[in-house]
Length: 466
Image (cartoon, rainbow, N blue to C red; front, side, top):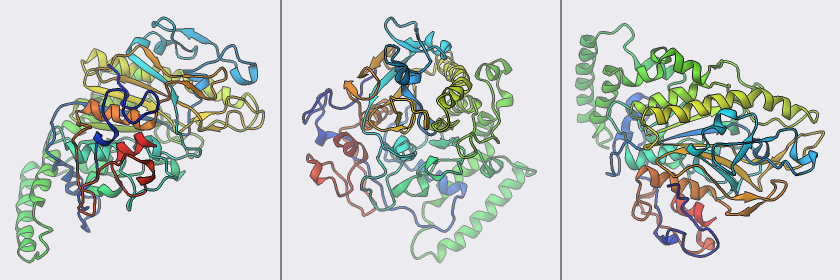
């Protein structure tokens, strides 16, 4: 079932009986300081995990760039005045009592397969992908190096599922507006940065004009050079590098990951079901491309053994212009989104992946209840919405509620930390016992009192206490 770890109301214990002091402690060992940059072996150091389980549980995280309008999508208020309600009407879903926007007819027919969170609170006020990808408000204190994003934490704790697939892959396009981009691995270091196959890295995943025999020759040469370097390496930085080089070779000699990214190998009917977009057209120049096939690629990567896949989709920052500006954009984006997200959810179920793969869809904040003739629906940090699917959770429900104009949470407010704790639990990361050293070599533990949260401590505990 879907269990959001955290308090249903105020108090020092959470609804599942876990105390604040007993939650997940995540930090890191000192980052390996090498001058090798973003080489494949460096990225593959993620194989060295904290010794946790090797289950096939996974997460697909979809970032709706710029902040989607919650009251026009999954929390409509048809009884509110027009300047609040807008032109969209709600439609019934296959779950009695659950209504969503009429522009989402395909999602409406599978509402029993997802959960709508209508009361996500503690949102930031400005555009910034940081909170989406690591749950932390970027204006709050952070440790040296910054907080790592979710996929990097999972990489550090669990490592890869298979030797030939990295634990964390990012399908996010690089946006020209910096705050729209992923924050990176933070103080965990580049060893736990996402594997990014969207750019030139993808060309390095295949043997372009090199036979396996020649690759083995180069491997032998590398070993001889490394042995020389190791003999004069007083700092021991070469120690342990063999295992990472071996995994890099594994990626090159195994076609699994490269094939997962090759959508031409997919059934054309399935590709058509998701729809396609142009990855070279960045919406409004500074957003992400509207590329439905990213969701298909994410599913294929999960099948190939990746634990966490992140992707950014389109641009949802539509305020500005006349009253109709935002709604014209919604008419353009909503049907495409309905099609690809419903295809992903259906695909996971049809392929038997829905028990193991959880999907989270969200943006950085909600939108103003009142529609302005000048800015449409502006930034609104007071409340936000999210959609969760898969993960073997009990779906077909709504968590939380807002007031009559979708401006404030009035029932079961949900924090970002609760959602993240739920994702950690789904992955099998024990929230009561996981402890990893920070970059000073000290174990970090949560504290009871918010006044003591100025020093770095574990990610999830801090989130749940904020």
